[in-house]
Image (cartoon, rainbow, N blue to C red; front, side):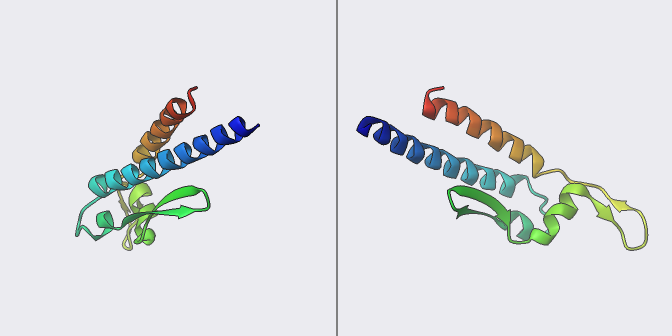
Length: 106
């Protein structure tokens, strides 16, 4: 039983380290691939720990949906979408799953 508890603790620590590393790499990628009109939006990507999870967020959160999905203009027409979050999200998910297989030996 003691050996199983030791393995569980080690696995928990390794998974948390993997999650933090994946989130930090995702935030770094978003900083480099985000639209850079003034640069403030791209520089605003952050990572925070919420419980046992890591969350990537932007302090200019009002712009994320508008830039990712596009939006209507005041005088008609639309502003084209600039998909920059979804590709990073998909890459981070893939990286995390592959890392889990290595960490847990699956």
